Image 1 (cartoon, helix red, strand yellow):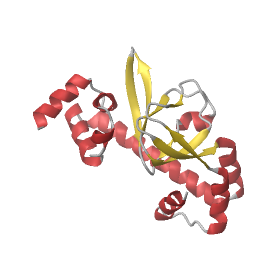
Image 2 (image 1 turned 90 degrees about the horizontal axis):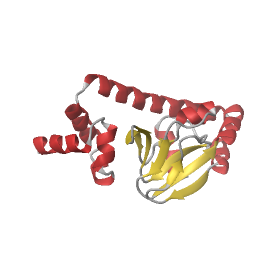
Image 3 (image 1 turned 60 degrees about the vertical axis):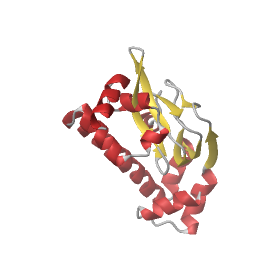
Length: 189
């Protein structure tokens, strides 16, 4: 879990060996294979995961179409956050898009660490802030950019996405059909 510690240190979280140890003891390593279902819609998400490597997506079905809400990559938190925090059934599915390694902590263990370790609250705040900014940026993109602009922004911000993720998932993420994405790609190239 040293990579998580280094990530958190880079974000200004003051982690000593003493205040880091309880987190290490409560996290466990989990592997997923490509196409594994990490969470089914309707289940309560009991784990906050941090991705060591690999990629996943959060999505839901509407009118027989998969709509991708979010992609998650290395050094990102993976959870259906509303389900995790509110202890309610998830409104989305989570699927591994590649083979993955994640580190997970159970909700109850995280709550205990929040109560007993001040650094836990800093880590929780970092998680919420990061997820909030990602959500805000996505909403702003949908309200202020057309499909081609959303595609170009995604290409600029996450160029490796296009080597890892099927285009049909990218199309659903930016709110268009795979055919419309194909036309945009042809027009730009």
